Length: 173
Image (cartoon, rainbow, N blue to C red; front, side, top):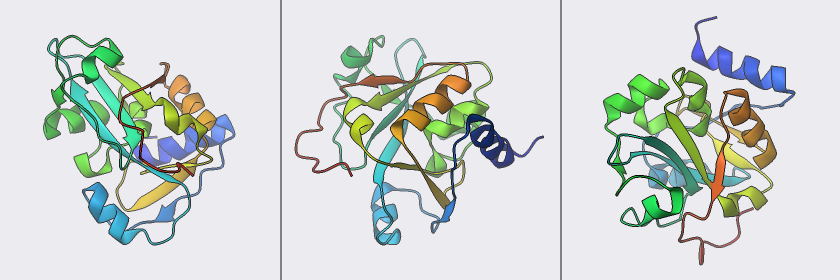
């Protein structure tokens, strides 16, 4: 099976996760997505691939309105020095997705286990978290426990951490 999206939904099936894809107009930024999604249920996230000074990769999953302080984020995650954005070609090479479709679900494509998934701890209280299923033309909703089970099925543990800046975000559900 070579189609990544098909592999993703097969993994959901194997885990007993009923993930239904909802059409979502293509977009590249959180702001564009907000304008296009209408009244879709659930909590929306922003997903960033960052690398530290030693080249370690961290996929950050935060509330879409959360401000992240990249100058101090490394201290919260135990990274080596300040973190910066990974270039688009690295996102594609390691996770197999275009930057506008970045999602924690892309760890399915990280065969070498290079990426640590760090999820804002406050998101773990949400009823539903929405993500792209490897393409930015659809969205799926998962319970936080389903997301963690999926990440574990890819051979790693998702790290729930205080990434800073959750105060003032508003309700997560």
